[in-house]
Amino acid sequence: MDQPKKKIAILTGGGDAPGLNSVIYTIVKTAILKYGFEVIGYKFGYRGLYTNDYMELNLENTSGLLHVGGTILFSSNKDNLFDYTVEENGHKVKKDVSDVAIENLKKDGVDALIILGGDGTLTSARDFSRKGVKVVGVPKTIDNDLRATDATFGFNTAIDIVVENLGRIHTTARSHHRVFVVEVMGRTAGWIAIASGIAGSADVILIPEIPYTIENIVKKIKERDEQGKVFTIIVVCEGAKEFGGEAVVNKVVEDSPEPIRLGGVGAKLAHQLEQVIDNHEVRSVSLGHIQRGGEPSAYDRLLSVRYGVAAVDLVADNNYGQMVCIKKGQISHHSLENVIGGTKNVDPDGEYVNAARSLGISFGDGIEY
Image (cartoon, rainbow, N blue to C red; front, side, top):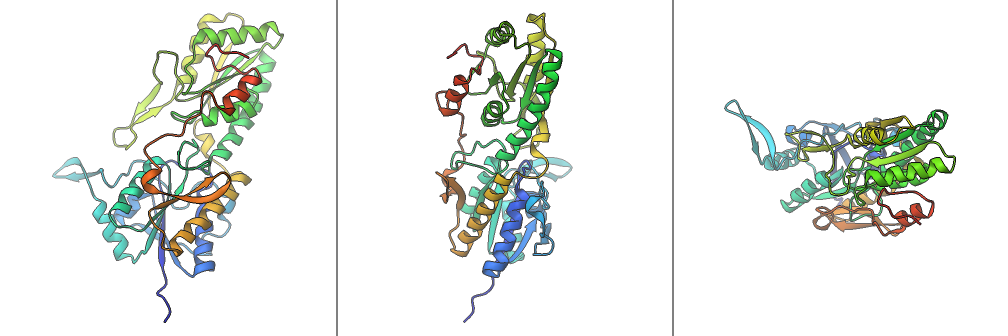
């Protein structure tokens, strides 16, 4: 007797990242062509799961998505259904509305839910799994800070974007003998800063894992001046901080599960440097959401395909409560119980930092090779 056809759903939560559409494309094609599953997608992340706002996903409406940035399902980084803002008696209150989402899954005939997201999104995925929902997670963040996988899709593209822009900034810095401070994303992990800084020939890289001092940065600028290199490129992660100081907060978004939004350290640092350097103009550039936009790199497309196929294979094997991951170059999976709650940070004594120091790059901490 034929088994009933499975129906799977996809949602994309958190900040957007290059590769989301690539994963959607892969899941849909694998589900339909390899297993004969039906596929739907909830819009705007967990919000769509709560409001039951979804669309059918098929070979026609996902055709050509492999190279397209963003997500056709849209996304939201404010909607934690276990602590969701609703209005009661004219007042906004926080409530656990996860049971409404579970009822929608049942009403829609969904057998399994594939969730694409980072730490916050996958925390909710774990919580739904604990309530009996058949869940598979796919790791997404340009910050590359999920501890249970060696690589997240979106990170490689973000590096490429930063490196391209550093090349453009180099030309104007050299032409005007300026100091440029380039702020990049990453929150409390310095992966984007250190990877793009090395590849983009930065002179100073400032990351959250290694506190810096203004004096040590000035020392590096003067050293370059003495060598006849009369411009300096500084790459700073948004979560970097001075020795004994705190990260710069751009704003607080009260209705978000992650209300603290970092940003502004680049402009602050440029202002500080202007006070103590009299032979250079100092400019700051924040690349911001440019790092999230556009087509995914070839590497991220391939990674997205590998993740998408692996996610559907887990569903076919009835292996739920898992997140697909990369370990030592091989696709694997890890329990959702163990993939969140801790950040994968740059090792201050690790290979990347050692390589950068070997090139003469300063971390503003006074340690020089």
